[in-house]
Length: 268
Image (cartoon, rainbow, N blue to C red):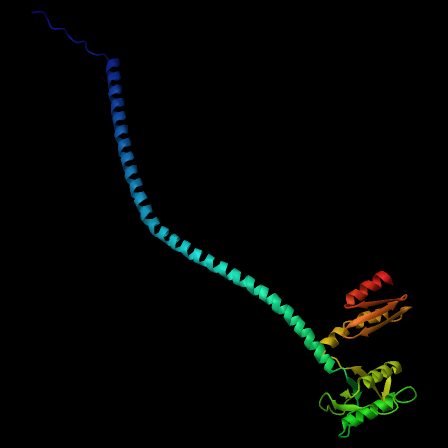
């Protein structure tokens, strides 16, 4: 029988290589197993996280849908309010225009009812002696009488003080003329005479206007001071509240004090 072949015994270097190869194979299998485990864990965690997010988002989605419906209702309501507001603004503008017209008419009616009235300021208290109408008529005759003035007491419908007695201090009287021409004559004579003296004191006579018209006319006081003393200039207030200015043969009418100031700056 022939002898069996004897396998060669590996040397030290070959044994080392075999050990290294075996170690590498083990490492690769271990890494692959670890990788598979990690991937499985991550996959499970992702699935769990997705489920958790889905459960958390579901109520939020329902809430958002509710909010969306509510916002839509609010938007529709706001659109309706915008339309109503626009209609109300138009109505307001119309009502305001009507109010201004009615206010002007009311003011005009009030002042037409006062067109025969005058106000007399700084009359000593106690002069009326129980008959203020006769007292005021005699007062006007005394301060405005004489040549070219009043020849007889004017015809008054009534006269009365405009406030309560205040301890002997001067009072104001309101007098209503029966004839408009006599009232205009008294105002003209008062302007022409200037300072009016009665029993040692100064009295003043003015037309009787409503509070609103008096305020509008008073707004021209400043510009009248600017015109006062200018050579060749004549001016005067025209009813209800317009300033007439004559300059260099030209007559101009102004409705506002600012228009007068512009005229002075550009023309004088």
